[in-house]
Length: 271
Image (cartoon, rainbow, N blue to C red; front, top):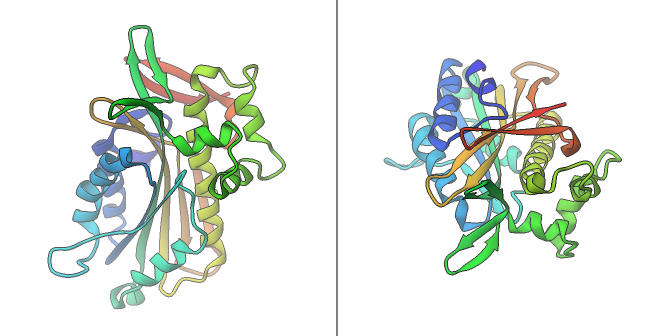
């Protein structure tokens, strides 16, 4: 797992993240590898999905039919983890070979934020989309602005889980520097959605022994090639009785994040 742990909190090329993930999973020597990909519906996430397909899926997943490989995918506003989706994915990849040994199931979950490189440094949030200025992630922007669509209410409930109002934290300039508001929102959101996936895994008895790897990330949508930051890595071992959960990464409190630019790439740590 060291290859993934070294990427936590560091903005890197998309292919670097998916390649590191491939090497970690390959080292497990599982006879079966499956995947669940969770993305925002935003069309700007096409590069992230393409990299995961080319650098991970095409190398490790079984053929669905001749020369066709694919993960189970969910795409929705804000990249919300849909409860039960990991159970569907686990059942799909519970092949005969996994019954005899075990399988690895990767859950890759991506929030996203737009980045514009200005003369005085990156600007996070606004996106020049086609011929007009937009925002990314639009769902997170709308949630923080007080929107009341059903999807935003679901996002808001997640951000206010465990008796912590992260929406209020993100909107408080004394606790979160406004230039990093939308980056920190995307990081906290990915972390919170990953926690939901892990809880779903813990409650589900797999059809075949399974080692799960849940990888929350944030995509940086750029005018040039997109980049990606790994938020954390959860390993959940369901090859035996009780689930064994190991976690390393950033927490879910945006007030604790600290941002630093190194060569126009973002590094995020915690205080």
